[in-house]
Structures are given as C-alpha cells and as structure tokens.
Length: 59
Image 1 (tube, rainbow, N blue to C red):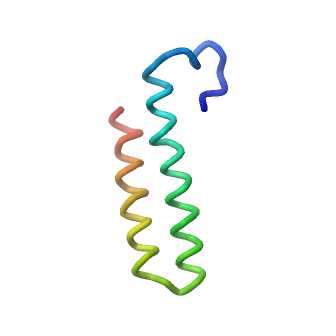
Image 2: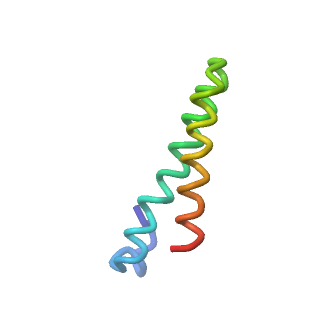
Image 3: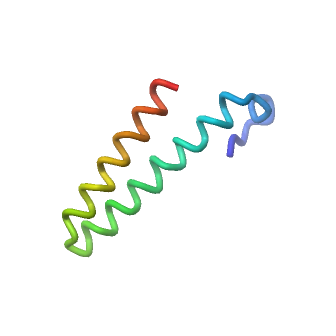
C-alpha cells in the first residue's frame, strides 16, 4: 500500500504496490527455503523475485 497520501490515489502507484509486495514476499520465501536446505524451491522463489523486480522497474 502506498503510504504517501498525495500518491495513494494514483492507479499507477496502486498497481506498482502489487509487484513491490511480490518482491518482498519472494525474497522472504527464498530465504526461508534456503535456510531449510530446499535449494530448488529457493531458486523458484528467486526467479519469482526477479520477475517481480523487473515489473517494478519497467512499470
């Protein structure tokens, strides 16, 4: 959620929030799976992180 009141109403910023949240969620999940020695799953989450990061950058 965009916390800046002056930007919160803009649809572009609202749409960006979804990708931004995905970046954080994927990073967290990758770290959890890596800690649990589930490298294949961690790599899947890193791929999801990369895709979400790309969306944030090009949005």
